[in-house]
Amino acid sequence: MATQYDIPIGSQHISLLEPLHFKLTTENEKIVDVKANVGYVHRGIEEACCSKFKFRQVSFVVGRVCGLCSISHTTAYSQTAEKLIKIEIPLRAKYLRMLVIELDRIHSHLLCLSHVAENSGFEALFMKTMKDREFSMELLEAVTGNRVQFDYSIVGGVARDLKFELAKEIQQRLNAFKPKLEDLTNIFQNNWSLSLKNKNIGVLSRENAMKYNAVGPLARAAGLAIDVRNETEDLLPWKQVGFEMVIGKAGDVHERNMVRLRELSVSIKIIENILNGLPEGPIITESKALPEGDAAIRLEAPRGELFYFARGNKTQILERLKIKAPTFSNIPAFVETFKGNEFASAPAIIASFDPCLSCTAR
Amino acid sequence: MFFTSTELKTLIPSLREIVASAWVTEAELVDLFNLNIENTTKGLMIESDFEGVPLRKKK
Image: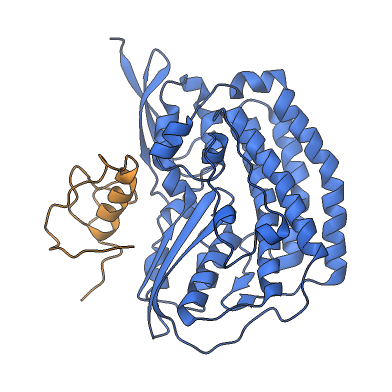
């Protein structure tokens, strides 16, 4: 047996976007074992939500769980609280929530793709992708008021309405982005240098995706048809606005890139359908009810299934709030995916996971 | 969803032979609630020498 070396990556490392620690055990440059530590940014948010904040304020607190997918957190929590106080929100608010969730998915997927390019040694593509992503950040700011940590979904509906002029601008900016997306897809699909770093690298098989309960683009790239938008229609009517699931096959870094790029096209189509069919009406349902009982919600965040559970006891303070983020669910699959790959491929594999440690550690 | 009750010191059997990915959830429960789960030690979510129990309700 060759000598084994333990090589730490993180918690602060140039190829990591977030404070995450992997200890990779290597043998002849091949990764044979992996240990993960994901708790560097544990902030006790669940405890704070059950002790320091009233249940209506919690939607603003959980928006701080993560800067990238804060709309997923605020929407999932708001839906949980709405279940506890037994209210139905207006259809316009549902459509506006879906609009911001899909805009958020565009900026999150483009961020992930840019980092895969960077970690694969393709700096120019990193810069191009980040530049092309900027329109989604500007639109999110215009719609919600914030570039990150948008407090858009609140208990009962949404905080701001969408003006006609802004809807028109969103459509124009999406039209301008479409040729850029085609260009990006062409590069990620066909660039020979990138393929050396991405094709057949970090393969997660369909069997392992199922065995280790992978979620999100990681699972879909492995051929697993799993997307909450395809399963639940009661809270947000995804199929009404043209949702279609994107599934890959190969399960490698390249396939994860392609799944994300194809999901961008689906997101654009959903946003266009929302803008064309946005129902008139109020954006919030007022209620003075207090949360009572248990409620659990699943929502498809950019990285996969986000799960919220809350228990109310008819007071302003929740008794329990549990957040299960997609990156947390994917950790066992991450660990398995590394095994058998060259150590030099680790940065691209990590970026292709699109890990979010703020969500995971909470 | 289902639940069951047990004494805090009881050794809870691990589910990882049935659900391969269960180790990560079990490690979270050990860290945040200080449960006693088979073959699971502290250190995934918080430092292994951290003495507090972040999510245990105070009585």
